[in-house]
Image 1 (cartoon, rainbow, N blue to C red):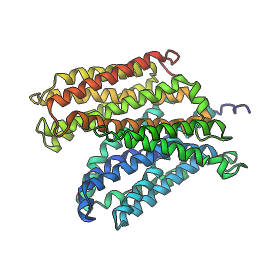
Image 2 (spheres, rainbow, N blue to C red):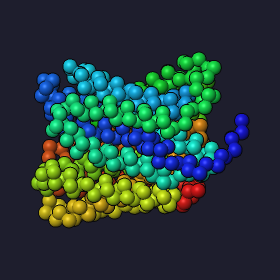
Image 3 (cartoon, rainbow, N blue to C red):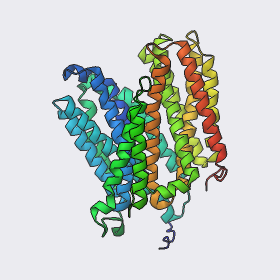
Image 4 (cartoon, rainbow, N blue to C red):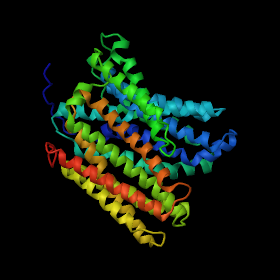
Length: 460
């Protein structure tokens, strides 16, 4: 079947078209961070421990890691717009369940529903953008992809202050309730401004079971779940989980190779070495990002003696400069250069961090935050654009979901790195070990970028 001829559209990516996509794709990052300020109140009101309250964070991460490519798969079978709206509807349901939850079990169920629902936003947005670009012959819409990346970065950073404000004004249940109006706004915007899916992209003749490949999804979920649980506590590793992960991974490979409509096109990924490197780079970049967000913030408070408010202000430039860099790079469609620069910026950040001590001036700490923001902005846009360039149109949704999954693995890995290096307290020595790890991550990321010689310096 030949691709349709490009249609001339004056403004293929108008504000009305991209606004709902940015809105929906931002729901997952904001829910990842907004819960942090509510955990103490939840534990007190529901007579639970802080450890059990913290499971609400892990619950969303785990659900999202599995659901991101799953929702991408659903969009290829039933239409990206339909799944986008379905995801927002689940966000509203999850928010309602959390708002009314009488026990910790109901709250955990709410977070899992939120993880699944919010996971529809990014992969379906990428699919809708790709289809729009291919239909209108615009090439890679750099500014649009940059906006998608910025939406995720800013909302993840704003989740903490927004959560604090909501908890202060209306209690911890407000961080769940806020999802209801946000989801409704997103659904209305999508129905009004995003074109309906074409009839042939809806439910097809294949049976539902064949179309969804539930066994493939279940085996993939087992692989990711066992891997994340193992990575979450490298201080006291549960080695038998490695065997479980390998067993699930082998089962995934064997099943997906024989499935008539596989959940993940493993042969495509197996042949696509550049795409494999993009996943690894994204894992490394997100691991480095979260090491800074969680590790550096912990050291600033314990080792440097800053108040939580000042810590937030010191790290705020990281988010701001990250968004600015993302916008600049995306508008110019820089690709390979941005990926190489990402690794170089991470290496530079690690080197600078080696010389930072508890006596460092606040201006130096802000400078470190700015440097890490540059690395974050470059990496987010560069890896997203690389995936767009390296993935066939009909696989973009699942591939985009897997990109997010690699990021979640990086986030969980970073928490264990911090626990291993800091131990009971965040000291200068622990910070310097993190700095060496950070620089090592940057070196590997740079080498992977240099290996992608087929990637153009500027995308077209």
